[in-house]
Image (cartoon, rainbow over all chains, first blue to last red; front, side, top):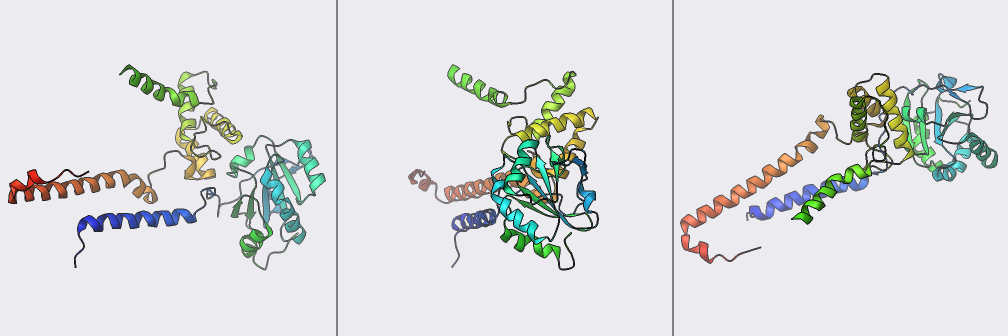
Length: 179
Length: 145
């Protein structure tokens, strides 16, 4: 039996369309892949949130893996992930640097005093200049930088212990030790 | 007819009404229009379907300021687009670049048109053949939607 073309062609086109939709459904349109992955971490030297006289930046962690967490007091997702960040800090696998993005210093300091401080240091970026270098488009975002200074992972949205264990820990391997 | 043209005129002006950043940034009108063109080419990553020229988002304001800074530093359009894609990926360009992985995307309109033409050609030929074989049948064929 030979199927007529007028049946076969639309059926084939439909199958192709379904293929595209299936792939599209499995992707999260909210996540824009970062071109930074595998590249050296963008350099910066910013005022410390707590001490304007102190300068903090990626060079503080030379040779060690570390975490950069972009946050702000106006960001709801940051409040949501805060307890997870505290727990990750408690596990002490990697130092965590905060990047306080487009925020007010006094508000940010009060937030840390009230909710607890998971950060080893916090860079203060009220104008969002450094955030642009890191391709930040919405807080919270969390980057993992390896011992050679390369960005190896970006997590967009609130982090959880589950995400930490599943997506971050395997990248750290067993040889790496916290501070 | 007047109503239609009035509507068309309104639609044509609509994108201008949406522009958030109407402030003069450059004294030189050539630079100002270059600035306006560049920010219209860059996507606001928070709002997705808007350019940073049209968006009120704080990030869009930061990116506009960045474009201005880069222009004042003497960077070319290409260098500004490269600066943005190095940080945010191709997604920040409202017009995707032509590259092997976007060939299908760019070719799609042509492919669809070619597909449609092929179908039309097949149908027309078949009808012509049927008409030649049996001219009387043509008149009897009922109209189909």
